[in-house]
Image 1: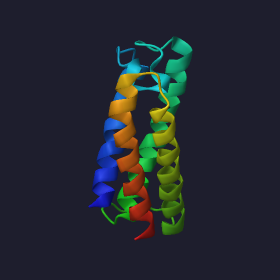
Image 2 (image 1 turned 90 degrees about the horizontal axis):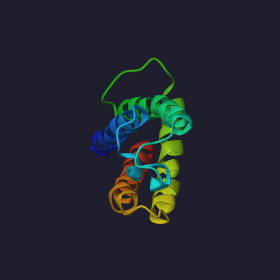
Image 3 (image 1 turned 90 degrees about the vertical axis):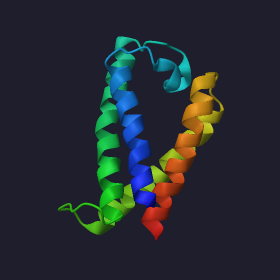
Image 4 (image 1 turned 180 degrees about the horizontal axis):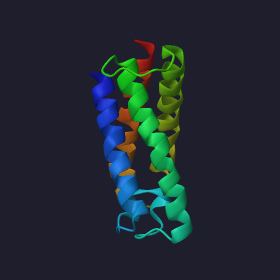
Length: 123
């Protein structure tokens, strides 16, 4: 169950990342919330994060035994641990954001995502 919730949260974040990368006015939810529409340079950074988000989703689903991948389990577990701690750091960064949207929407998502990834990796 934790892997499903973690994948769903990261899926929501991946869709948000895609929309922000495409220029939708949702920038207040990401990257400090400074821009409503991300500048072109920041869109490239945002777009590159999308690949990592897909890897994270696949890894948590594999470690949670919901999908089959042709990679060693220990590598996928390590990826889950990495993203669990990444989400934890992201939680702290979101709390410090000047954007209320980022602070009140993304902080709980990051915290719940962190818990889901770490529980999946260690249980």
